[in-house]
Amino acid sequence: MPIDFNLVIIDTPGLGDTRGIEFDKKLFERLEILFNSDDFGVGELNCIGLVTPSSDVRLTNKQLYILDSCMRIFGTDVKHIINILATFSDVGVPEILPVLKAAGVEYHALHKFNNSSIFLSNRKPSSNEFNKNQLLWNYVVHCTSDFMEYLQGSKSISLILTPGVLENRRMLNEKGRVLEQKLQLILSKVYNFTEMKEVMEQNQNAQLKITILEPFKERYEKKALNCCSCNVTCHKPCPINCKICKEMKHSGNRKNCTVCKCSFKAHERDNYHFKFVWKQDLKNVDRKYKEQIKQESDKATKELIQCLREIKNCVETLKHIALRPSQITMENYIGNILEEEKLIYNDSYSKKVAMLQSIHEAEKMSASLLNNDDELVELFNRIELANKTQINKQMGCWIM
Image (cartoon, rainbow, N blue to C red; front, side, top):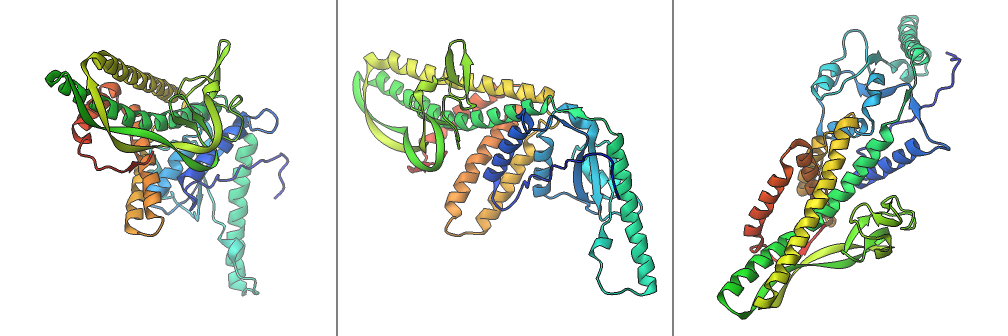
């Protein structure tokens, strides 16, 4: 079946495989390079094909996650070229269509395929079998020809918004991870400030046992971009020099980090990343330092609010340009993996669950920011509630 046009196929990126969610993030980074490169990149598409079995009557959490991840790559400018490629499909309407509709998938056209004739036995068939096989083969040729005619007559759609969607999602993920670290830091600072205030109201000078969140450097198998000023990891893995890293942005004559806002000079790229551990310490409380302690607490709170505002800006941009702004399916998917890991206890259990719990919390926060207009008020209500329970937390390592 010859065609008289060039056809370039970008195959399924492999989301949801056994290498885990961290590998999925690497795939998104590669797609960002593909859609941004002027030399070898892809600037336009004629069709986005979602391949799915026609007989599926429901979608699992994993399928929802893969579907949601694929749709989240693109901007709203490609919604008219999304096509359903239903496999194992014969006559009639595929059962998968109402399922996709319920999942919020909008599509332009349906193309049915049945490639069962390709898997027939090589033995010589009887005359009756031969006729059936010929019918199956003719059906394959007919379906494929119809799809090729559709491609030939379709118009190319420029991927103007897609690089922006990928960039904003990457920034949202990085800021969400740093925000999670800052949340824990501010919890400890605000609680300690409250304790010191109570002691200072009762005594002129006193010693107070406080719980602090202390950063430490943990070896990382790849290079990571770390801020030595605020002790956070701004980008990992970071494959290039920090001066030209995509997390750095020019602001006038200065180059600052888009994640922590510090100068690139305060950053270093090395084989470690920052983690945090809860420790107890004795603090000399003096009334004359009351104002200084309050200023430090206020400064940390302002930094947190600024980080939230930046995340809000990314979210608002995604709402306008992204085909699929919601991230709730991702949260559900990670939650499902966590439940599976708890059932399969092995040597790597604690490390895997700790990593997944961290990602899960970041995704829940991103979903909350996407769906609530009063997210700042709600978040600080959560901080106030957490302050009341933080003192009862057992000592140990807090994995970020």
